[in-house]
Image (cartoon, rainbow, N blue to C red; front, side, top):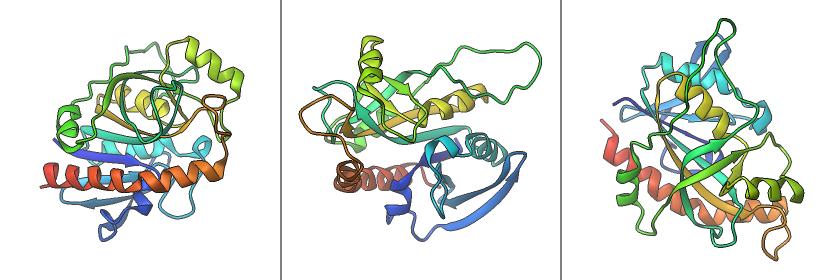
Amino acid sequence: MNLAIISGTSINRSAVFKDWKLDQVETPYGAIDFKRGKGIVVVNRHGFSEPLPPHRSNYRGYVSALKGLGVDAVLAVTSVGSLKENLKPGTLVSCSDYVSFAPMTFIDDGPSGFAPAIDNGLLNDLKRLCPQGIESDRVYAQTRGPRFETKAEVRILQSWGCDVVGMTFGNEADLLLESGVSLTSLCMIDNYAHGIGDQKLSMSEFHDSVDRNQSVIDGILSGVTARFGK
């Protein structure tokens, strides 16, 4: 298995990858920065320098880069909002399905298609690394960002049976699964979605929650590199 980890701000905040060499690869979609160590490739979906907002992330670029680097399995670590009061901030979630009505693809012409299926091949290993447990078989709702969802949008997503909402994973799943890459989902709930619970949703509260949960993500990433590093 040739493993890659895709994450966002948690990578730049983490000490786990601090000493890993930053490299770059050219793709048909532009140059992509990545880190590599212990045989594992690491990509920051927002970039390693000035962060891009989710609607501007170069999804095709970094998925194309991973394929070119020989990656055949990806752990996607994402920050999400909870659509259910019983899924509290600080909870770890793994999604086995997703909703996205603006699908991404590498296909530009000709009849083609596939049935997306997240295999979560690393989930059992992740559960052994997470004593606090992981809520599995959840459904991720993809929105465009960069703004949070409206209360009306949240109510619709709830009615569709979605559990968490975010702005990146659906795009990555479309491209990775289309490319035949094994995909494992790990989400950290950093906030309740807009209108859920009593606390008003704000960017400052969101960033505070991300900071509080960073140590948990660091522990998991450290365990993953120890378990799967070469």
